[in-house]
Amino acid sequence: MSNRRVIDLSIQGIHLYEVKHEEGDVIMEHDHPFHEILYALDGEGQLTLDGKQLDFNKDHGVVIVPFSPHAVVSDSNLTILVLAFDAQLLDISVQKELLDVFFNVSSMIRLNPFLGSELRQLLRKMLFELSRGNPLNLLAMKLKLSELLLVLARAQQPSHVIDADSLRAEKLRLYIDSHYFEIMHSNDISVKLGMSTRHVNNIFKKQYSITPIQYLTEVRIEMAKKMLVETDKEIVCICFEVGFETLSSFYRMFKNYIQMSPNQYRVVHRVRSRNEQVLV
Image (cartoon, rainbow, N blue to C red; front, side, top):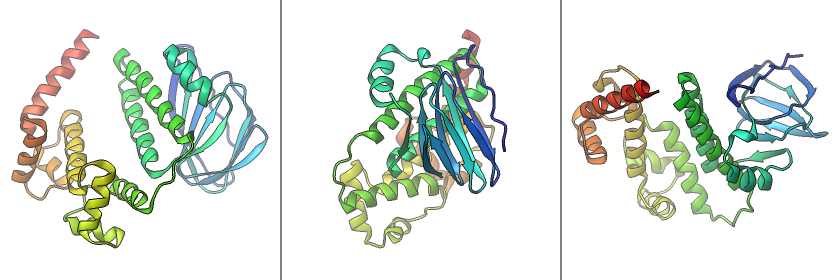
């Protein structure tokens, strides 16, 4: 049996934390006076929600409304992100158009690969904002929470018939998101789907209006931007880590996309960050 964490939302109104359960751990049935979102990062388990027993496995999400009884049993080592929040901190339109319409009862939500990727990115951003802890970061968390609820609401809408090529494009986008640092050529991508590079380009561009290689470059540039501002790593190390083969190609691509060099970007955004902290 595991002890559940006592959560106090009286000050900030929102809290995000990780819980690790070992195989066989049990969180006994309980409820609380606030909303809670559970997201399984890894492992398998069972969730009892309003008396119904449901499989709760990796990449499953759950929205739990206030005073809804729930319990968790771990079938293996189960890691869960828990996002607890007071609905009153949200904009009134979010409360009425998202919470009241899509989340008036507790429910399990299974996300397709594309929406699942969006949800994970938002949770990562919220964890980052939480680690900073100043008023602007708290505001950012509230904004990200609204985006996250929108993603979960879209996941509950009736899905249209998706053809095989659309599913392949989503699968490929998810693969690029998690393997951007090791893809060297367009052939590396087409091999994963077992089809020609030309066909892969066609189906991906039809779905997302850019080619897989263009999307790969955008992902790498976004990761590089984050590392330039948030770390002290040498630019050559960042170039290597995000998957560029040469420093010259990294500088060329970065300047094409951002209209300034990596060095300039680091200086400008660090000065801006310091100024924001002074204002706070």
